[in-house]
Length: 174
Image (cartoon, rainbow, N blue to C red; front, side, top):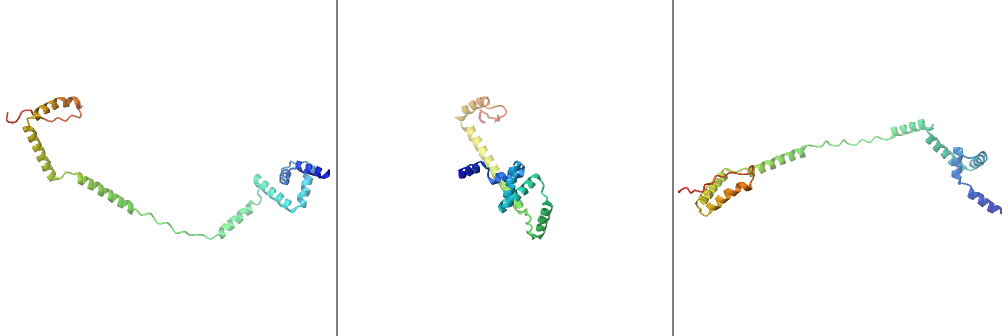
């Protein structure tokens, strides 16, 4: 019966870490605190865990008494670290941007130059226009079409878009 009683008592007892945390937080009654302290003194692993819990509690409460020594150790370790000197990066050159600007100017110049009318084109276009006007003036079949078109063109096109073209229905010889 005692084994069963011990098993039931162990089932009701919280784990050792929980009891140790409760001891540090002051949540155990006097009898349970004395029993827990006896366990901690008797076991080296529990003493180490108790010490670790005390350090964690001090750090959480901001009672880090070791912070001055820790800062000194960190600063000394940083002084002992070797300084790594990396080469300075080369400054970016502006030459690609200059080539890009020159290529843009060349492309725009070539485009405008190719679109510009040439002197020989002017003479040829003027000759073609003269020939077309002469041909249409001699074609009698086009006279009624031109008259009808002239009448209805103003009704379809808005005044701002209209281009006025002088058309004569009378032939030069009549």
